[in-house]
Amino acid sequence: MKILAIETSCDETAISIIKGKKTLKGDDFTILSSHISSQVKIHAPFGGVVPNLAKREHIKNLPILLKKILKEIPPPLGSRAPKLDAIAVTSGPGLEPALWTGINFAQKLAEEYKLPLIPVNHLEGHIYSAFMHEDKFIIPKNIFPLLTLIVSGGHTELVLVKKHLSYKILGETLDDAAGEAFDKVARMLGLPYPGGPEISKIAKKGNPSAINFPRPIINSKDLNFSFSGLKTAVLYYLRDNPKFSKANVAASFEQAVVDVLVSKTLKAVAEFKPKTIALGGGVAANDRLRKELLKKIPGILLPEKQFTGDNASMIAVAAYFKAKAKKISNPSASWRTINAQGGLKL
Image (cartoon, rainbow, N blue to C red):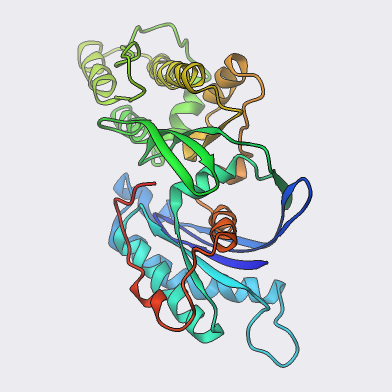
């Protein structure tokens, strides 16, 4: 099965074609072609993503990326379209102006190629990203129940996957997502956008024990998260200590976030006893988080850093399992009802 996927949930324009097939060991995947266009330099002067600018860049970049893809995957002789089984597109969550550009583009492709169109939840993609390696990888049959910690700019969730496409949110952030907190603290420190990688970079030069920042609701009985109080504690510390060390603040803040994430994940592991444990999302690229999780949970699946950010290959993988389960729109009319859902839940 060959699927072309489109991802435009935020500020990355991405298109990918994957081939998936069922084998005795599980489902075998090959990434045939994948391209991503970043908008970081465009949004950096604003300190965050500007939705209408993101929309404009997606509209400009999608045809360019498709042209690159089609050069690498030439269509069959006598046909304008590559031999595909379906088109997939992220329908949410994300910035709705950005999501609509991908949906509209995908609808036109589905109509032109006369193919089914599969809407995909962006977070589903992050769940599968932990299994992705280079251009070829297998998602084994016996991975369930699967516990995934999703940590990104917009989400911090512990999700239990009982089978493909069956999700239960065990815990989620009550306020700021971890990635959002990283970006806000970076702005307080005068660091450039995107803030998360900048915090991590200077944190390597600091002492993570230098400042005892709070670990909000780390000892609560539930599996929810909260990072708003930690962000406020950093703000007050900077106000009261004008000669602060940026490196120590960054390292201590990062350690506080990681301690909460690891503690809640360990609590979920003890309570639900999953067969497989994984990490996903943009913050999954954070070295301290990866190191601490590996130390406390040997065998946890960590996505390769190239797949931690937004990419279309992970959307294609999620779409593959939807296609197998026949959760697809027929190419005639029903795909026209697909809508952008900025607050879409798993």
